[in-house]
Amino acid sequence: MIRFSELLSLSSPEFELPCDVRGCHLYEARGFRWLTSGPEAIQTAMCLENPASLVLPNHRAMMLATLLPESVSTVLDLGSGGGGFLRHIQSWVNAPRVSGVEMNGEMLHVAREHFVLPPEQLIHVTDAVDFLGRDRVRYDLVLCDLFSDRSAPSALQDELFFATLARRLEPGAAVAINTLPESAESLLRVVSAAQSHFDGLGIVQLSELGNVLLFLQEEPLPDDETLRRRLSQSAYASDSDVAVAIAGLKRLVTEVAGAEESKEERGPGA
Image 1 (cartoon, one colour):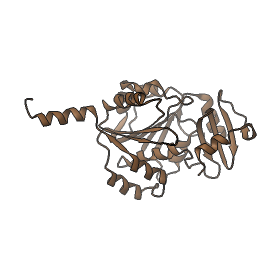
Image 2 (cartoon, one colour):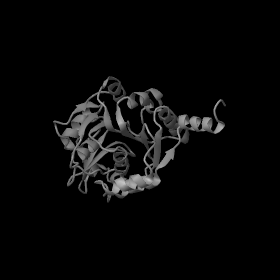
Image 3 (cartoon, one colour):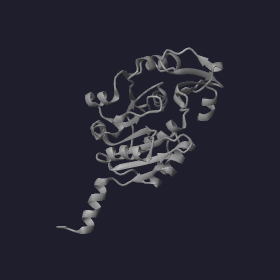
Image 4 (cartoon, helix red, strand yellow):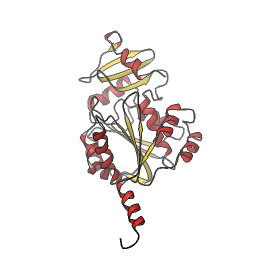
């Protein structure tokens, strides 16, 4: 698979194609097609020979989230962009029901025109936060990749976003969120907002890209042994990015859980 840095180095006028999305540039070279939204930001990428494969390493590592629930039959893709997650998940042997949310109508047009997003794929063209507030479906898996250039929305630092997200989940469901924090403080604000509504919280740091992936469940995350066993029985058994994500997963103790543990240590009536 091509490296992220290679795609950036190939993002030159020599390989550029016409593009209808303002502020973005479309390229094709070495059997790949990709869309950039800034000098260092790749919005989406696709392998022309295998459109269902995930090209970007942060997207492949996010598939760790598929191992967290016991089963996945409904998926929500927040920030569908070029439709990479949608194409990939629809290629599963037992494909779940997948819905996408994309705010930019121009981006949706490019996804259908240049990134083989099927016309029948359900995409809600609206703001992801507004959609969560109006939606009534519950999901087993939510993938959240909300970016404008290299900036994540301020909603990720808002407890209300995570409260609304939690209401859209089936029991045992999992959430994977792609973030690119500007600082440790900005990451802490995202984690703190999530902690009020999810007892299971883990992060995976991708050193090459600077991305931090956040994995959430309402109950504590499965242990490493369980994740490795599920990995060996899954379609990602030979995927090194998912294996590395499991090895690098750092589980965080929520503030609520920490308070309960302190209370138990003090004893009744403390």
